[in-house]
View 1 (tube, helix red, strand yellow):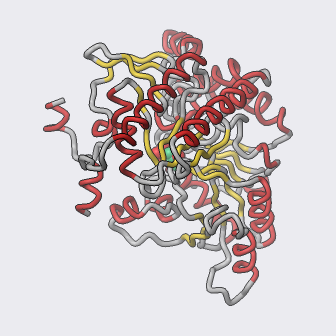
View 2 (tube, protein in one colour):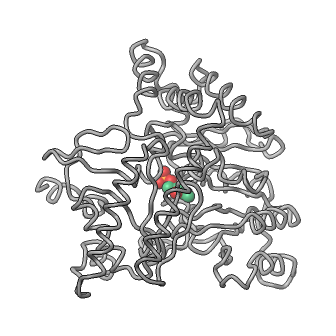
Length: 432
Ligand SMILES: *Cc1c(COP(=O)(O)O)cnc(C)c1O
């Protein structure tokens, strides 16, 4: 670890939570250099829905590499791109009665969010973006302006302008429908809220604490966007590609977003790939008006096509994810009720959060879990939620083993007197 400590910037984050050198990985298991096997419930923050080094997907990449086919071609046409467009259109879109155009953006989720916001502003001639409390959309200035987290906002060092925050579903408690509040403000000419270019929403807030929006709330927000002539954008960067038990996280609500933002698990292999799905009538770009060197990297398109062919041609994969999600949820709920009334379990599909209420309990539990062989990350406004994002392809035995480790770690944490060693990140946070 010494070379990391001396040479890599203080800005690194996961090496503090998971202090090991990870040398190999397959499926849901990562191997450390000193020979430990660790179960991965973080999955590249949702970029590895099909597991590490998925062998079937790897075969497609290896074949493509061996053939000297084009890897980098800016956004030129290649057989790999055509095959991806065809496969995604027929297997994902047509099956769901959806029709979209594809825009390949730079490789990160933030790149795609920026493109979506820019397009909405161009179409409407407006500037304001409505986003939601505890939302997370990435680190670039435009995406950051629409993200709630104060630690990140402060670190940006710039005026973050252009977004207005509205309360997410449930933010004001179960008795208040925050969509009514949004509706009221946007229909009042003198509310002080500029009519938005877009409403940007996650159906489940990943970084924000696994907060789940209801079907009715999402439908209302979509209708409000339509009424005020704003684009309705779903950020499916983390919750898309099957995470919630359906390919798009909004299928359960029957939404029809003007723009869908995809990244993280899109390539299926952890390779960087991001894109927008744009309704045809919203495709207002002039050729070359938004560019980037790494758009639609062909290797990532090949793995993305393979992932769709392998997992999404039949309905059984989505059903398996829903079933596994139910098992996880009932196990976590049992753990929550066994250990007192304060804990809460939230989520949809295989995106679940265990709200420990305090940062200390969540932090100590996650640290103990890693010592015992499980990677789990924390999220939420004060990092009080332990977040479960196992690979969607995980086997039941490994899933249960991971949950056993979590339960044991929580039990030990609750038995300890409350005198916690502050972790590096918490220390850095308080220093700012
Ligand atoms: C991770 C994430 C992003 C940003 O993606 P990057 O690739 O890190 O830029 C945007 N939105 C959501 C919901 C995310 O989870």
